[in-house]
Image (cartoon, rainbow, N blue to C red):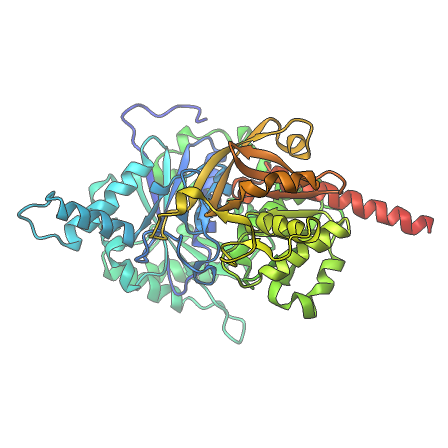
Length: 546
């Protein structure tokens, strides 16, 4: 905590982070990395992600649009950037910390219909902009610093109300309480020169709407040359020491180290007037640095069997595997297995892998191959982790090939299946709207003593869910009599499955990847790597003896 706690009348500080030139530059990672360092300095840091799209939430969006749908503890379905904030800040966020245009307009229109604005013309200014400012202030309440990332790039038509709200916000708050950081691209020309013109035009666009950045962060393959920083400072009207490099790094968890070496966190604290309250440098935790720079020996290969050929679609799984690797001191290599291509070119990747993960998903595409992957892992003693749909497909596979229930399936995939071992949750029968209506958020699972699940979690666990279907209660006894054990339950709902006579065969109806953190890896992922390492060592010994 800060050496000198803030006085009761000291409100939160606000750091707005905008982007220019192109999306996907790393605004969120830059902001989250700065937040990590501020937290190391003893401050209570939180974040808000603004997504200018008209969707109320990310729940109905295809992963190809924005990557995975990340689920918060309160059930909010949000953009994957909030997952990065949770991982970097090691904090649980809420749905109120994600602002979308759909959420804003829905709220304002509902208030208009109920008569809250009776007699007034409802407009973007002031009603939408006021709602933006209200949400930011409410999310920041009780914290020392709030980071607000505006999705998209300056000049996007849908971002207009947010930039106007920031302009008003800066006018309403004290100068030392608000900072505007602008992250922009600094590309190389063909002759190897760092070009500042895109940054100049981006800042010009920002200034045309009444916003002057306090900080410019240049994203480039390498650190910005001194001449480049000087030129950006001159033409963007910021001090030279307010121009920072954020070059490419091998791992996003090294970005806080780069930000720290550039002095961005110290500059932010000085500009916000909180440097005097920060912990002395020698007293700040080095846990993050120690963790992400820990020497790793060896590699574990994990086959990830999915249908979205996009890493961002399974970002939290990749990160959870990485966290488990950090804990074990090994590098994790993820072998992408395209479910639809598995029978042809990708099946060999299962044989090359030390373990198999079958992730969640929706719809029929790729499910036969996910079932086949579960069977391969079960029959060949390959460590296996099934998540949500992967858990359900493991149940289907077991019903078909061990209980010999021909045609067993999920009613989500085959509505008229003769053996509906996976069926719709009872509370979903009368639901018509698809947005925000699944079983979502954190729910507790009670774990049976003496099981693998108990070894990993203890007596219980609270993990995040996102599903409409569950194991059909009518088949539970038959499945368990045949050897498939449900070791974690929420009342009569099956949450965890495992096999006793297998190195590691584990499935969860929930998504443990959403609560995995650097330094606090998710138990099922740690268990998967434990088993993968044990099996690899065992095979190595067998080969030597042979």
